[in-house]
Image (cartoon, rainbow, N blue to C red):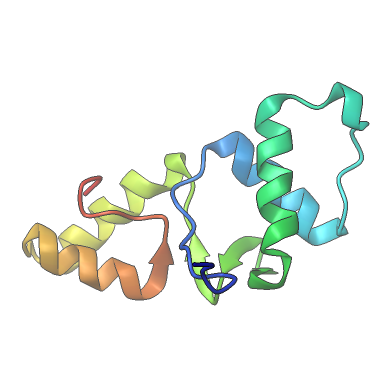
Length: 110
């Protein structure tokens, strides 16, 4: 049984993957020759080409299906800031709060 295209959500990206994806989305292509690409670059670009219509850039931030995509370096900062803004709510409630605005956040990571 085939799943509908775009059914999956986009998980947490490393900083390198995030940088590659920003370049690919903004320029529409990636200028490193195929033979010289690392496995990380190849897998990131494969993800971009499969789900190209779901990625966008607004204000130098990468969005996936209208939600901001977080990279590893930003994730802990975003979680901490939202935890303090919401005055120490529980993990599940914080997860559902963040899930509405961001993609790449999991309850286990929080």
